[in-house]
Length: 176
Image 1 (cartoon, rainbow, N blue to C red):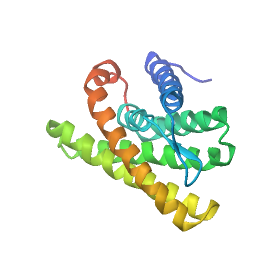
Image 2 (image 1 turned 90 degrees about the horizontal axis):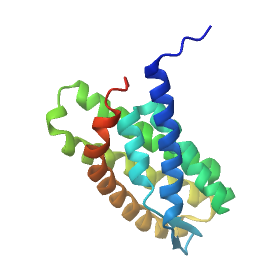
Image 3 (image 1 turned 30 degrees about the horizontal axis):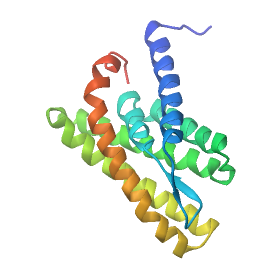
């Protein structure tokens, strides 16, 4: 028999809400990238927040499913599996690095940690899409798309830095 606690319900509810927020924020503003037919968006801010607020496992789920769902609903079918893996791994990496840094006692420098860990995670995102688009199209097109993806990552880090202090007090009672 499964024992459901208030803590589990809160964690699952927040995961569902962040999954939906990732999808909506990814679809809300789309700027096309002609070289690959993809798009850049503000959703990476919520991808990072998912990792920071929910931890690596639940954050990866919210980011991966929410991002893949946005590609699916927007008709970018070929990107769905790659997006699921890349965005899920981005949130996983952000959440894991952040948790490790906090565990080391560096929490008093929270904004710096968020910026550094978010940047590392977004570097992975740019690299992940570069690999995928090199295979899908060619390395030249993937290289051209890397710059808009890097811009998207920088904006995502900024969004996460701005929203984390507002959302952390609401989510913090969740055990990660």
